[in-house]
Length: 83
Image (cartoon, rainbow, N blue to C red):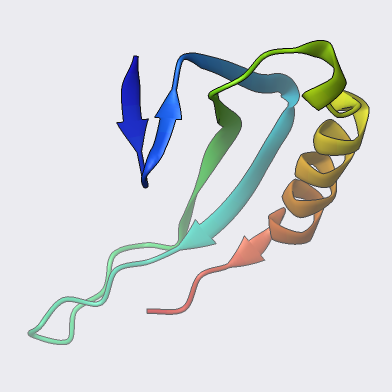
């Protein structure tokens, strides 16, 4: 058993799906003023839940968590990161 932020953690659940992804574009501006070409990256999101107690009555519907992660990925998808 480990401790995370003062909580005793005995179990870790990971929630991630291939659909939990987003793509963003960016370019780096260097100190001398030169810039690299605009390009993108794809990111996949996995959420780790650290649990101290895994009794069924303490669980929530994982579809709620999956929906929230998917909604956040949609919000971040196809954005431009400005330096």
